[in-house]
Amino acid sequence: QVQLVESGGGLVQAGGSLRLSCAASGRTFSTYTMGWFRQAPGKEREFVAAIRWSSGSTYYADSVKGRFTISRDKGNNTVHLQIDSLKPEDTAVYYCAADPYSPYIDSRLRQAPLYDYWGQGTQVTVSS
Image (cartoon, rainbow, N blue to C red; front, side):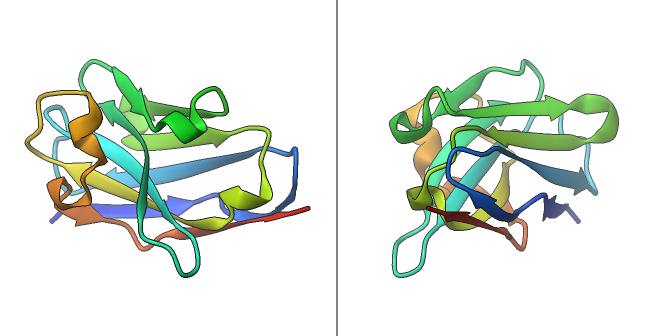
């Protein structure tokens, strides 16, 4: 059974940085695409970024390009999301997700139903 455990969230001032981590276990992830989503209070879950485990190819939502960086550490089965220049509108619960099947790395990955496995989320709060 795939397990995803996020960590690294917290309270930070605008302009600061955070590094979120997602520890993945229970499978060999070589064919997986890993994603990060976020959900702000009263809003729908929103795609943030995705990475192909095997190649390291990445895809980002337009709203976060240039500030967010997704990466994976194969040796530790961990996916990271580096968030720089944080803004109050980045405040949300951030979720890690795993898609076992999609072989592509493009806008189709924005669809939450593609991802079969989800973590419990980690809260990011940005104060102004």
